[in-house]
Length: 353
Ligand code: NAD
Ligand code: DAU
Image 1 (cartoon, protein in one colour):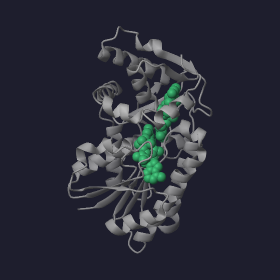
Image 2 (cartoon, rainbow, N blue to C red):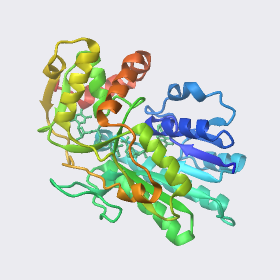
Image 3 (spheres, rainbow, N blue to C red):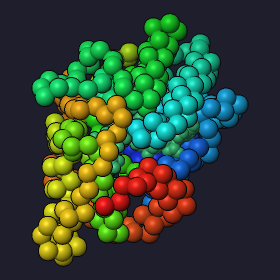
C-alpha cells in the first residue's frame, strides 16, 4: 500500500540512512525529508538519491508551526518518523536551551500538527518518535536497560529527549494519537558528524591530532551500525504495536579506551602505519560533567516480536566506517571547516597533547 511519510532530521546522520532505505525500498511511497539544515544537517549525505521520483526535500524548522502546517497540508502524510533533534551531549552541556527548544518544543509542535491534521481519522496513521537509551540514565557494572527501566536522565540532552518521549506518550494516552517510540544505543557508521567519538577520532588520526579521551576512558557504550538501526526503524514503523516502545541495541559493549585502541589498530593497518602509531595520539583529558558510566540495551523485545538483530559484527562495521571516511575526505573537509573549527577549539581548549 502506498504511503506518504515525513521524515524529520533526514539530512542528519541516522536520518539520511533512514531516508535512503525508505526511498529505495518503497518506490511507491512518497518520502518527504523535513530538515532545518543545522550544522549537523547535510544534503551531501543524500546526493545518490536526491533525484529519485519519490523523494522530496523541505527545508523547515520544527519550531516553525506555520511551516509544519503548510507541509502537512501540502503532502497529507500518513506517517511521521521523527529524528530531528539536537543530538550531541557536549553541546547540550554548553547550551541546554537549544535542546529544550528543538527536542522538547519542536517535538510538541510536530505532535500538535499531526494531531490537528489527523484528528478525525487516525486510521492508518502513525507518529514514530526516535529516541535514545540515554533517557534511562547510567548502569553499574551489570544489568541492562529494558523497556520498563525507569527514566533517569543526567545530561541536558538526555533530559530533553526524556521530556519529548513523555510528550509523545502523553499524546497517545490523552488524545489517542497512534504512536510508537524506540530507544536506541550509540550508532556509528558513514556520515556521522565528527563531533562524536568514532568519527572525531578517525578525523584526528587522519589529520594527526591528539585523541582526547574523557576521564579514565573506562566508560562503556553499546555500539550499533547505523544501517542496522535504519532496518530496525523500518520494522518498528511498519510492524510495531500502537503505543509500544522498542529498545534497539547492538549487544555490543565496549569500554571507550578498548574501542579507541581497536580503532587505532584498524586505522594503522589501512594507512600503512607501523603498529602502535595512532595509539601514541591518545591523550586523557578532563571528564565530561555528569558522564554516564555505562549504557547497555536489552534488545530482546524487538528481536522476539519483530525478528530484528544486528547484521554486522563491530569489527566489520568499524572497518566499513573507516573505509567510508578514507574514501570521502571531501565530505570530511566540508563538515570540518567553518563553525566546526570554532566548536572544536572551544570544546577542547587547552587539552591538546
Ligand atoms: P544528527 O545531529 O546527526 O542530525 C540531526 C538532524 O536534525 C540534522 O539533519 C539537523 O539539521 C536536523 N535538525 C536539528 N534541529 C532541527 C530543527 N529545529 N528542525 C528541523 N530539523 C532539525 O543526529 P543523529 O545522530 O542522526 O540522531 C537522530 C535522532 O536519533 C535524534 O533524535 C537522536 O536523539 C536519536 N538517536 C541518536 C543516536 C546516535 O547514536 N546518534 C542514538 C539513539 C538515538
Ligand atoms: O546512547 C545513545 C547516544 O549516543 C545518542 O542519543 C547521542 O545522540 C549520541 O551522541 C551518543 O551519545 P554519547 O555521549 O554516548 O556519544 P559520544 O560519541 O559523544 O561519546 C561516546 C563516549 O566517548 C562517551 O563516553 C564520551 C566519550 N568521548 C566522547 C568524545 C566526543 C570521549 O572520551 N572523548 C570525546 O572527545
